[in-house]
Structure formats: C-alpha cells, structure tokens
Length: 194
Ligand SMILES: [Zn+2]
Image (cartoon, rainbow, N blue to C red):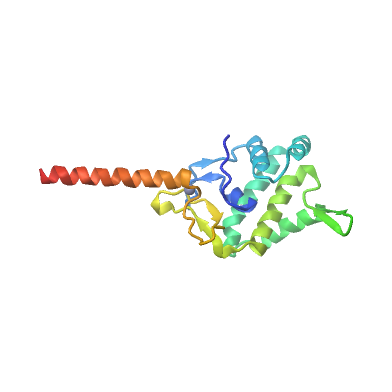
C-alpha cells in the first residue's frame, strides 16, 4: 500500500485513512485489517521498524484495530468538542501504561511502552497533543466541494495558502477536471452557435 501522509500530525494522518472524508460516506477504508494498521503506523511514524515487530508479536490484532478505529472516530468528534470525556479516559489508560525513563538530566516519557497497546496508546496521546498543542487556526480540509478528498492537514505554509492535501494529487485532479469542463462547455457553445 502506498500511503499518502499529508496531515502534518499523526492524529490527522489517522483521520486521513478513509477516502474520501465525506460525512456519511466512506468509499475506501485504508485501515481494512490489522496488517494495514501496522503498516500505516510505521509509515506515519507512530512506531518504528523494531517496535512494529514487537507489536506484531504482542498484540491482539483485531482488538488493536478496533481501538485504533475508535480513536480515529474521535478525531472529528473531539475537534468539534464532542466525546472529550471518552478521549480523556482512553488517554488516561495510555498514561497509566506509560513509562518514565531517565536521561542524563531529567527523564523522558515513553507512551506505548507496552507493545500490545502501543499503537492505540500513542494514537490517543497524539490526538490529545493535537487538541492541546497544535495551531488549529491552521487546520484545513482538502475541499470536497471542489473535487478534493476532505483530508485534514495543518497548513504550515508561510502565507497559509495551502488549499489541497497535495498539489500533485487533488490539486492536479481538480485542475485537469476544470480544464475538461471548460473544454466541454466551450464545445457545447460552439455547437450551439453553429
Ligand atoms: Zn485531497
């Protein structure tokens, strides 16, 4: 599977695993089975290669997938202020399993220290991080009404002018579709004039 990771944040990349992201319709769910989840988690930087091996040995695959899909559903909800208590509970579970490891000075918090729960714990933590720390004034969605895919991303461009998930993908599609439509309407006009 060729993953497109465009959200600029793991929680948004999680939301972007359905296409298109249109309310009430899911045409394609890219997290169709546990193997896809593990593959995506690696590609999205949620786990590294060695951790992915640990996860595969330790997890209950279907439960981990259900957990990840539940957190995915919380992305939209919590961005709209809903189900915050449910996310808090899930995040508290993740924190209960987290470990503090010493550094030369201070310590590092390792979320997802338990491989069986690693992906879900890190996704819950990522979503809390998104809500708490991301600059959500830069949150955009690839415009569905103009032929985009509805995927979410943080627009980090300097003048905040990013419109599409990727220019090469939806941006180009939309441009070529507009061109086709223009040509079609031009030829209709020509015929009407003839
Ligand atoms: Zn798009």
